[in-house]
Image: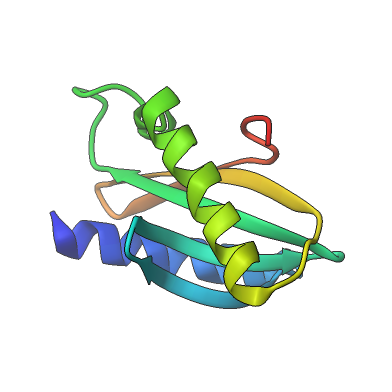
Length: 115
């Protein structure tokens, strides 16, 4: 499972770079949790949650970013801003990745939920 997650995060980082994002950090760890990817997109700091699945038996990957996970990501963003001692525009994106039979499908949900 950890290997699948790492593969998905690698795909996500490459996908974002191709779209012009600058990757600031991967697997940013804090005392309150971890953010998969922190990137910059046209002056906005983007906190990216990556969900990877090989099938839909537990639902679509993006469905795992429930209200609890959203709250956690918002708190992590606040922690990051306090650590950097500045405010900036923030956005939350979800990259939903489906890998099956050698095929890779990436769905990018920009501004997936409110700040």
